[in-house]
Length: 187
Image 1 (cartoon, one colour):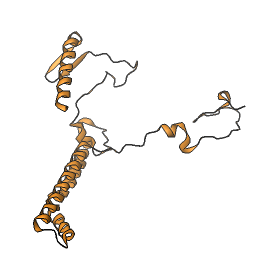
Image 2 (cartoon, one colour; image 1 turned 90 degrees about the horizontal axis):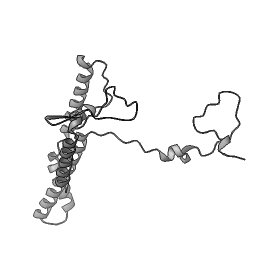
Image 3 (tube, one colour; image 1 turned 180 degrees about the vertical axis):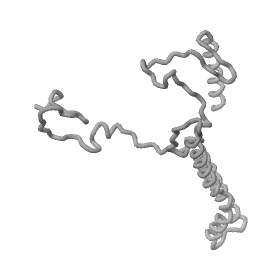
Image 4 (cartoon, one colour; image 1 turned 90 degrees about the vertical axis):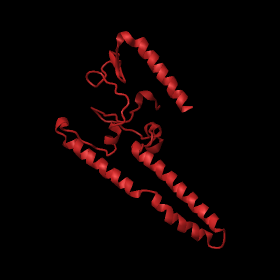
């Protein structure tokens, strides 16, 4: 009978002997495949902001075009007039801005790779330089890897102040205050 004791799981290597088997649950029916998230497309914050602004500008140009058609008066050929006004107002959307930003990101990436102070740097994505300027929190232990899966706070820098272990109550109150201010600002 087929059971757990005579099952070879995914990526099993038979070191000695041989195995006769039946393959079940392959392709999209496997647990690995069913639990895998689709790959996320990496888009920088500047790109998302530009996309949002471009959408707003397109809505503005469409609204202006509709207003111009209404001021002109609805008649035969209004759709043609609307399309003409959309084309006229399309200059509101700065297409060259996207090109300039991509050129700037490529240039920043090049200079990061050629920097003598950080030799061996490889920039694999063009949105990394823009994200480096937006880092809010940096948490690390002395080696960069957690060996015991524990992290103990020795010192924290908040704004202009530096706080050690003995100041944990003060840090907790500052963080609670900042969190409550941020929550009020978002509501």
